Length: 170
Image 1 (cartoon, rainbow, N blue to C red):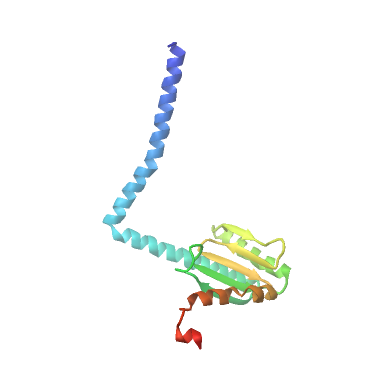
Image 2: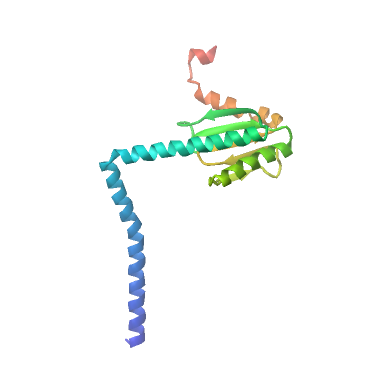
């Protein structure tokens, strides 16, 4: 084998080893972190407290945005344990398609200002129903006729009812 081919092979081998080492690094770090969490339960308690604080901050930001834009009939639907997609749905109404879009835009703006970027935004073009997915909280802003038609709050209330429950039957 020529000297230049040997050098190319050694470079390739070194580059592969370096990439493999980098790939193993994060896994090894995660493994050490998991081991430490098992030894120190206060780490998981602190992490949970931090998650709750972030959730509360996001919630307050969304409610403030809705209030600032004069959203109507704001309802919160707790879907923890019922949905893998989100923990809380906030449903609000706007008076027109322009109002609906403006309310949703304000939620996005306030989120971005706080460093909380939306995962997705749907329905901005039409303005009848705009969904803003902020992760743990999904915001639905609708015109009243669309809100009445889809009745999301009732849909999730039905999910709370236990079949054969006497309170649900009455």
